[in-house]
Length: 209
View 1 (cartoon, rainbow, N blue to C red):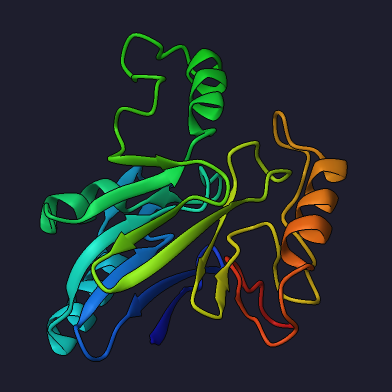
View 2 (spheres, rainbow, N blue to C red):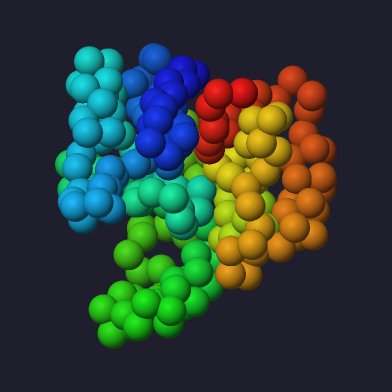
């Protein structure tokens, strides 16, 4: 299994492409759609880096995953789905809780479905699914948001904001319905019970440090 990280310096976000070097099946985790608040424009600079890597390696994108609803950047999931229509879009099963809350705040309940129907799959805790030759397990790790999911692929974890670099610790817990107590339980009872040799790929690296 190959893991390639793409760093977005504007938000400190890490996007991952995980691939099987034999079959060339691949998945994308936590993609970034660039947004400039100064002039309210969307750009695909970060996505173009993914496109180039995928083309160079001749990868087949089987799934596009988000670990949670991001507050610091826009997800590139919808744009990626347009480019790779055969790929399955995946989030955790509690995603509608976040949708229901924020569509109320932004007064857009009539514009956005709040049942998660935008996604192809919403995974329950410990659910396993196959993305081509890659087998992925979803581990619910709420606390940063109620809908946070860590994805386990072979010996690797993709934690989103549930676990960050050692100098950062975890994602913040003061967003609506976030909870430091719940996040502590997610890390200790879910992630810390895995073998010591488990590799961890985090959602952010806030450099320098």
